[in-house]
Length: 497
Image (cartoon, rainbow, N blue to C red; front, side):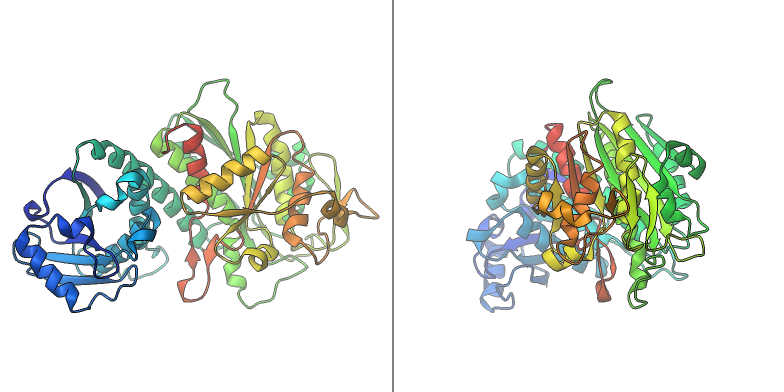
């Protein structure tokens, strides 16, 4: 969608739909107060009838409002004024965009509530993200496309003061770039495993690399990984006919000698569990086991679109995990790139096996910080549900930075403990460590495993098993944590407000 900013009075706007915010379904708020007497009186009379129920995100569509050039007026409920924030405004706008897109409205204009003046950057950014989320449609694999014949294509944000325009333009630029990164992550994750293979991801990285001279894309082959000693990663791909890839995206937007932020994303394009095979019910959702890798692709695309002045490296170890005569067996011992031996007690704990070699590989970039992103443990879903990402790591400052970024952009994380008591659960009688730590604290012991390979730099781990996709009738990838990661990079560049 195309986004514009404008200074105008509501009665002068020629648009197919004028969007006005209302508090509690009854209170006028600044958007209604700005109207001339005739349309204001008409809308007040409508609100008194109680058709807008006073619940946030409800809306009421009106036609032929006197005194306005707009063909329609959409009243959207913003909830209680005392608890109003950018998130509530964006949520209400998301509902409005969805409604208008289904009703052949091609352009609309929002009178930005003056109540959002002190949070204008967040409001503009979040409106763009929320709007694009509502317009997102995945139909690449359908023979018949059921898209709106007259889709919504333009949103104008109308403010009162000229000084607000620059803030809004910046916010919309950031929001649309984040939304585009989320859409790329969603597209990759929603594709089935027979299309989105490790080789497909490698080709996607190369196409992305051609978008900017600042972005270089490479993909290591299994032979190259073997020469590097990546025995853990390669052990996972032995059960698959699809060759593994180690995909590397190098974005060089900062100073030449500036140490990069390295993002490492788990890229299991399908996970059947290997010999420790998963239950068949819901196994189709295991195409989403590469959402961590997809979020790295999406974040790097946002870096390119925003031309961020920072160095960022994306590393995506990619493989399938399938049962086969050559697949890992429970009890097998493999040697990682770091030289540590690993007893594989459960072949379904494969994500950490491909990540540990990628985390060792990250050392060569002399990173300022390393963040890995993975749909790693069902235990994280038990602990935090589908709302909050699990966060662990070895550096308090980096962890706090991620928590703040998540809170600022409504992509929250929660930090879990990680200490030697948990590491003891990984002890093995036959190797340096086991790949699982028993029934208790599965999310934490998985992070402890990765922590053995991250001692040479500042590191954080994001477990997105509960937040990367939705199941049921809403089945689909969410694009998280692209917002959190991009917000972190924007803050490091001193560009986010």
